[in-house]
Image 1: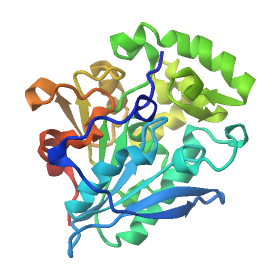
Image 2 (image 1 turned 60 degrees about the vertical axis):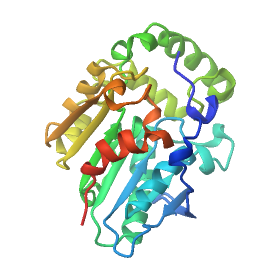
Image 3 (image 1 turned 120 degrees about the horizontal axis):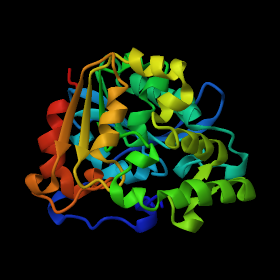
Length: 307
């Protein structure tokens, strides 16, 4: 069974030594197809900003989850833009059964709109794309990727179910062959919040995601040669941050996804929580306040594209 998202399981406990007070300006994005989306701009807290960061969320995770992380980046001198895909988080404006979108729509329309908004708010600054899970899978589908100086993926891998981490693989078949095909047509969307699985998702999103996850080559296999060519066309330098205790992504799935990016240099960084001085990271833990010193400063700070 697909695990519940952090918003469903409750917030992680705060670390008193690393509490961050997010300061942001909410604004609305308008995608090229006219759909409006909720976004946040965290302005750089320095007189001379060092760069800009686009935060691209995981499946079923709202932008609010990344607020402490975004606040830290702003404090480091980076303009940051986060957003919610259509139908998700603060962008959920209509009943989900009325949201007509798939995963590629989230990339081509929503993420592109967020990237354009960041360019406006951080003119001339190098942009780092930080993609959590799904946010590292949809990179090739964004037409204006040329504006990005560097991509950093966090806990991102192929979603092919046989390559999920062992704990998830033993039960994910219930999700793909039971919950999704039975509940989605019944409700007109996937009611994940009722089931404690992932979260509520538009029908087009969960059906395309299922199609990808049942293919050994994930999005590339499901999309055929055009999609393979899209992945190969990415030339932006990329770093993968993955974790040995990720309950969803195995080392194999992480290698598989990044192996599709054949047109660029990919630096693979595999992180052990014990060696990093933390008890657990998992699939969602990298963005918790408590990871500031052990992970953000140690592993992420050197990777950010700067002026």
